[in-house]
Length: 193
Image (tube, rainbow, N blue to C red; front, side):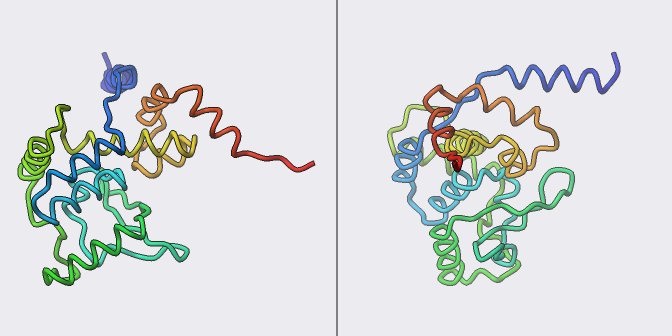
């Protein structure tokens, strides 16, 4: 079997797998289990931006930019591909305040921890918050993707936001949409006349 055929088959299997995710209430509960501001910010960053853990851990103050008057982050994703990712204003303010108070230099990462420690941070927060669900960094990325897709109904924008090369990986999130989600998005479209 050719390598591209194997990759296509693997991608199809992944698309058909159910996607686990956390709700906004779950995230709020998880954040209550954080002892450190750094840990709260990491969870909020992963959830509100859909970054991969490697992308979040390499984020520095110098990578925060303005894009059309709104905060965004310049992210180096998989395959050394750059993309701009929106950063909620309130989270930008919290990150900048944290960097100022903890004297993080512009080219130093906000989170001076490794991937293994990031997993520990999430699990410690989960235990302290009393959450029963299994939690891991990529779950927050899935959660952002599903909530974003439900609010916008735009899989192409989600594909770019997540840094996916092809629509195939983004399509797996479509299975989580409900009829109510689709109707809500449809009702936002108004035609003149």
